[in-house]
Image 1 (cartoon, rainbow, N blue to C red):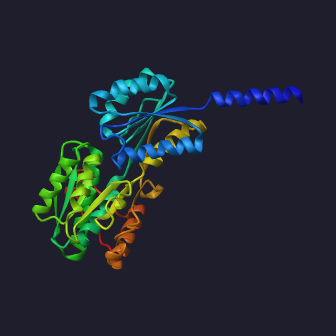
Image 2: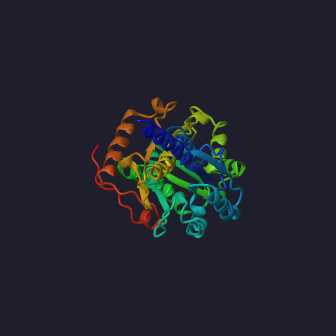
Image 3: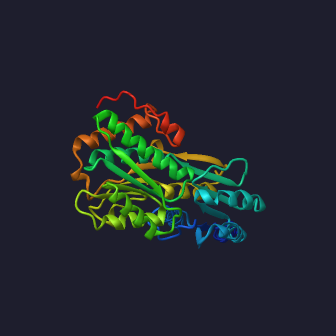
Length: 335
């Protein structure tokens, strides 16, 4: 019995020493974007709370920071969380140099490197749903998109949004138009605000932000507009940032991807490869519209529910590229 007790104490001490160290490397939008990076950091914080890991944070201020930041993180960590499509090439270069460190990569697909597990999202599905709502709610017949940079995850959101608008047009005999533009970065709220004001001047009364920290400028611009003008948030529920001025937010559960990735290391189930999060598994959705749901006709919300179920059932495939959008055909739908 005494020997067993000593072994138990040693096992507990060893267990304490085995606590995983996780380092989160941001993209250039950084912590404080109330969107993509903040959602990822929430996933790390959940892992600290629920899994007992230790967490560090390294901020990237420009793309040149990616390789040195990832290398520094890998030297002192069991797990490196790297977020953002633009950091993908850096992960591909750095991860093979640290085969004993696990990399969780968010927003792109890396296969063939055994210590990298990637999480991608069907963000076009969320974009579609909020696009449909925007088309139903516009009074001017024009809705906008302020995007960060023309990268696949952003374009996926945007073409899903345009498909949602097109679906509403076909089903309701309207002709809502989409105005879109890229500000060129994910860390310039002033540029996001200026482009939003330009789109409002061109007739848009609802503008979807797809620009990370730059997108906060979209929401800021809408605070000064009269009733009926709205921003649409992205990635996290951003409705609270300007209650009554954010119509809805498309949810991209980056936090779940980060948490699940870290948990796979803790559980010993880490396999590498790519994992897709979508409406089917709770990785995509829309906000509960806490401040605005009463403004949207119940008939529209019922239609959104039908469309959501059709997507889940594979009866409605949402485009995520320009080419797919150009060939998109609205199917027969009965509400």
